[in-house]
Length: 288
Image (cartoon, rainbow, N blue to C red; front, side, top):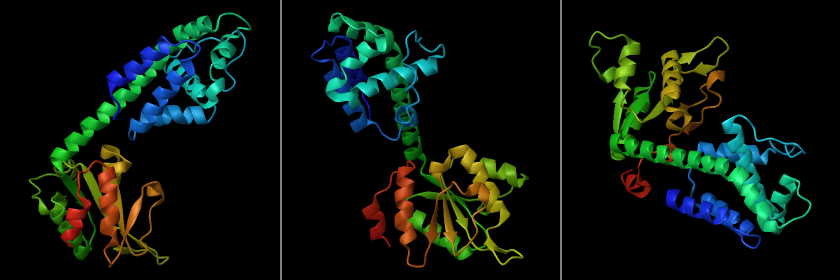
């Protein structure tokens, strides 16, 4: 987890750096970020743009800061990130960017910082905000610990997963176990699934197609689509039994094979933890 005051400390060092400390100050900041950042979509996007060389042809005489703020932040992040990879030659980047052939090195470092560090700082603030949001979501999920089970006709598979969740100290929600109260299926799904922080979708071979292929019930596919939109792919895990066909619309969603030996439990624990569920692997496995 990144600390805002620590990031501000590194930014202050960069702003006040001279020829002998500039590259080192930038490198220390990125070392700190790489060691402490968690799964952060803003950081990953900035790194992706850098690695793909998005701004590699930008530095030409007469260049201008992009008019779009997001573009300016991405460019500035890329420039400071490049200094790190250039290592001892990183000190030359400000001179090359500003197209200065001679003069005091400390002066063009100051000019470079004056031009780009405000946007670079905003990019770092976006990373910090994303970190804080993820931490907030994590705390919310830890308090809920409610898992929604999407299932078809395989009652034994459903009970096996419910037992697994019970031993893990998690509450499960199974739609048909709740009264209708005059609600449609969709209304019931939205109401009863509102408190769920993670979804396990059971793909059991319930329907056989004319070509002999096996597929899950269509209500299972519908509910998966709903929760993908609600929670995202990281918090929806499909548990596939046998050779059930995965619909093309769900090809990007990961699944775990449900096996008689029970290795699916270990894999599911790992995925649930990465999705924000607080689990103790050893304590759970002792109960099986």
